Length: 287
Image 1 (cartoon, one colour):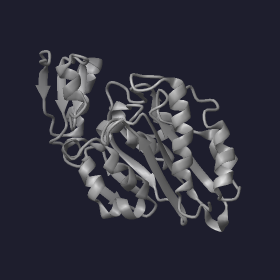
Image 2 (cartoon, helix red, strand yellow):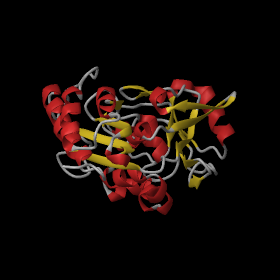
Image 3 (cartoon, helix red, strand yellow):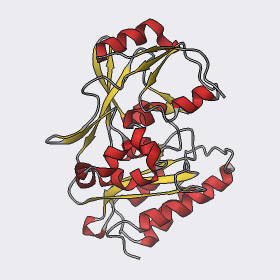
Image 4 (spheres, one colour):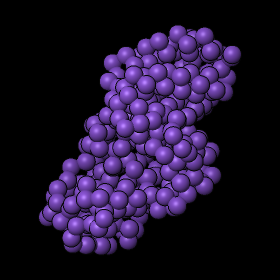
């Protein structure tokens, strides 16, 4: 397959990129890593009038540690996140997730912002952003605005980004002392999109669960908090038995969706099995 005809623009600044997006609106597509977009073009799932290549814009990549947060630029490559000592130290949940993102060749080109802006329901990074309480920084003609992760992801491949806006970064609050990560996913082959996945963050200090964030991905129209599970764990003993009781309601208020890989019922079963495996593997959980 070959991509349809399109115009190509390579802005040198955020302002130039925004001007192009304002001019072409929904007929423009941002080209960052291109690891999802290029196949979509070749299969003619996408057919924009113009590609806006943002790879030459300075300041859109990199990892910066501030006093109370870690900022990740939208053009930061997956491989940079995977190798970063700062990510491993301050956001270990991301470090756990990165080896599951596709394959090394994809991680060398794919970008953090591209993954989040695409909002694939089976992608790892949106789930981690939710579990860690990230805030997305969005540039528009009126300046920058910030959107919390739970408001950013709207549904299947849908986000809070307007056609004339550009995702420039995300800011992750530094986890509280004692907070621990847990991550796992089930896929047909390593590197495939997850059939179901769990990204979790919380504390087992004092042998009790607190501040638990449990996010399910791959099973609904977007990554979502398992709010019932989070409430059932809060303040309870950090034991396997507590987790088993909490998981009785893992799909409460969540609409599981079947796909080519598994039915909704299968995903519901796998979600419970995987969540039990992941949460029981958290540091500090007694078996």
